[in-house]
Length: 216
Image 1 (cartoon, rainbow, N blue to C red):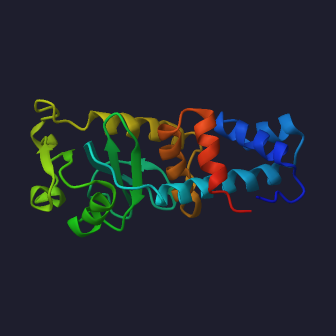
Image 2: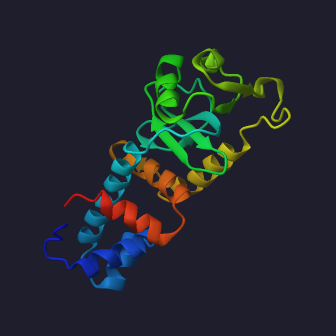
């Protein structure tokens, strides 16, 4: 059983209710008559629980889209383009009609991306990507692989596209931009929160996942 220090379980659940419904820490502190620092502490704990829950997810079979983005250096802001020097590369992996998984990576080389793909996607699944060379050879690793070549202004080839993951990228971008820059220290927490909010839109399901992984 989780101990909540000076707060009752009811209070902690109310804080999570507001967190899930995207109230700011200031709004929640006013609504619940709690100190803003207390709310910030619990919001961080929820985000850390979200990160732990993501690590425990198992491999899946199905149809997936993969892509990458880059984010600014000091206070993280959004920027596309694989050659953005000094930026933080992020790898996105989305199952069609399913969940998304995001990972901060050292670079977008095959050596960095392939272990994530193999750790999240079962063999014989279908992967859709753009023409980035790091995806070369996925067929040799046991996947059906289809690609579109954005460099040639091609965005759809039959059922092959990365539009779903682009939609998630737009959702994450809008959400992260609300914070007017995020520190490098907490960037991964906010990034995984975007993943979580996309994957768990039902409050009851989200609550079960977070409280199962909450360490206090």
